[in-house]
Image (cartoon, rainbow over all chains, first blue to last red; front, side, top):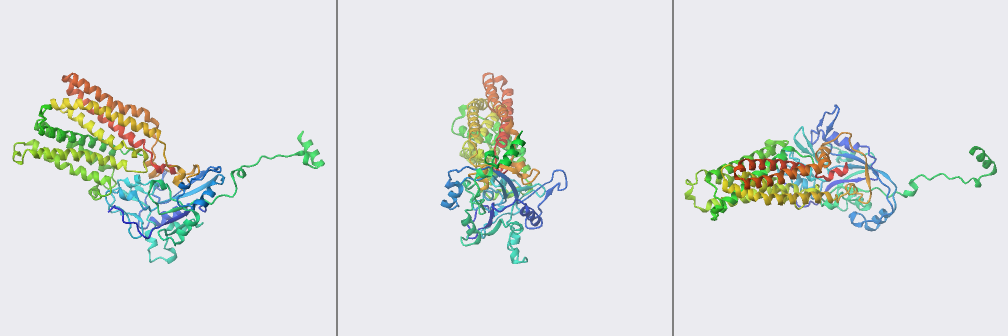
Length: 270
Length: 317
């Protein structure tokens, strides 16, 4: 049934730290590697060795140029999860331009429209842990779920004729054949900077929930009301303001120089 | 949004078919309500018109399965009517066959069904009218319920789909040979309907042009206060998302295509209807032409409806 289950107590998801992500694509690659043989397999590519390779990725890492910002009046409503006092003061300080690496994947929303629009019941949200999945044996490949997702989490495989999406590595996190330390999503396991954290966001005492509270984790496009489970930790405010980020013009006051150098300067300036 | 031709073809054809069904339901109801003076429709004509509507609807429904990855599983789409507008559309589309086929049976042999009581054709006609309107309404709601596509959330999306269905239905009814009284009535009704449809579309186009996206790239990555530019895409090649949701061709030619659509679905049919009303002798040519023009115009309008709508996932790219 594509009716949503009542909100689960357990909400498994990811917390992604945009401060430490270096955009190395290890999460994307290890995700592709694991899922090409896991629950969602096959994760087909078309013309993988041809001129225009194309395929399904559950993780895509975008890179952006963030413009320098003036000391802007903070909008408290824009950061619903941030500590109102600290969050505002952080945002209000002028910030230099920077690069932002942004890994994008399924957020396992509390209100996943991709599930409710599904006409067949192939899409579902698990009542026990909130993971959103596709039953590929029921999917008719109408693509409506991909239209209903603003985060681009669902991709259509023209080879299998069905929709594919992140499974939160459901075949790892509950896999008793794996060592306990490996029972986490492949992307989390692979991240060399530990920018990805996996845990129960429904439990306020969990490590991930505390991290979100401490760092002011945010929902993406919160105004749409999808209530994503995954949270993103915004980059920590940079100490240097925008003025220091721009190179200063070199100025030389010749009157301040010792006489020998002043003479040298005069000779060289001819 | 990428305009999938099978979906555009489906919404145009089946919309016209359901529009015709709605008109036929209304005509039968009027006749039973003692409105025969307005131009009675013979059972034979009714059968022809119903058969045409059923063919249009069936061809449309079959073509809509062409864009599915797994068409053989399409039957599963009837199961989730509690949450999904697409499923509701499927259920209503099939349910509407029941009154349509019942009325067709009655139209073929009205005397054989005399025993069922005079009230039944009227009840079936109401069911047909309501079923056809609900099916088109469900089709429109599939689009109008999608939050990531702000242009489709516009309050005129559902009225526009209904108006196009009624307009095409009126044109088809007017184009039917040998239904002179009803055909004239339909040609007459087409004129104000075309004006209403044009007004709805003009208003919709004006609004989507003037309404900027309320969600920014900053919101999309969780930094609402910052200005962001794409530095590097995740992959060098296009992917499903950029192909399906990103489509810029129509925005480039939007102005011209809108004028073409308006000329085809409103101006030409109105002129042809006026000619048909003034010169009944040429109605047999003018009204089929008007129908053809209207359907072509609707195809262009549907193509624009898809191609001009911007999906929020494009903010990431």
